[in-house]
Image (cartoon, rainbow, N blue to C red; front, side, top):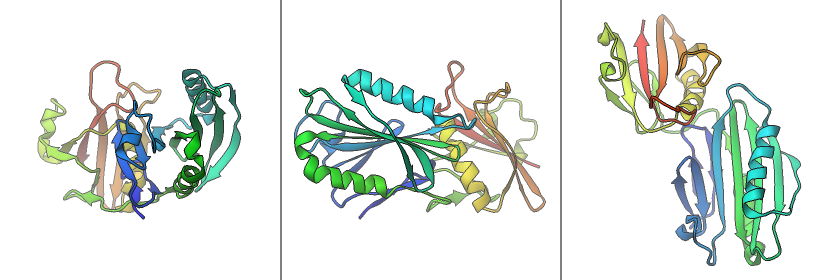
Length: 264
């Protein structure tokens, strides 16, 4: 069966042969047919699983996040009853619930939340009630396959041995920072991933490439730094790695970010 690895967030799911996977904005979707991942599709085999990751660098309790998340879902779909139970899988701790929908609603809905280190995963399963007998065991099988990984496959590195996230390409560092006096001591990379996912990537993968994380200033943080910063040390080399969210206003934790590295 196919195995999906999220290269940035560091989790894996195994899903049945013949199913489809699509990236839907900041979520990953799994369904029997492609139409099952279309928001307006209500036909047969419309069941699906959605997984969305969130960076919780302050390690805030997830119970308020859960109540807000499940409350929004319940309000949107008109759920009459929302029960919740503690839930644990693959080292993650959280809550799960089946939402009791109005009788006229032909869907069944389940939601879960898990916290693992700095990462919070939101999961949701939806399917027609009359397909529960065959769909529910498959969806349960996928959710039960969840693994939080210490390393992901296929990570490449630059000439200095710094791991690079997928689909990031080298650019002139002076196009990212205009006050660099010694560009020969810098490298920079651009791509479309959020600063939150990049933090997850580097906190996990930098040690796998032999780098000690001597300092980590997250984004967002109480400081006015405006970006995430890691000071990496390996042997006699030090690299200051900045994850720079793009945009001048309303920058969010999932805002796309560029990477700049200064070597000392």
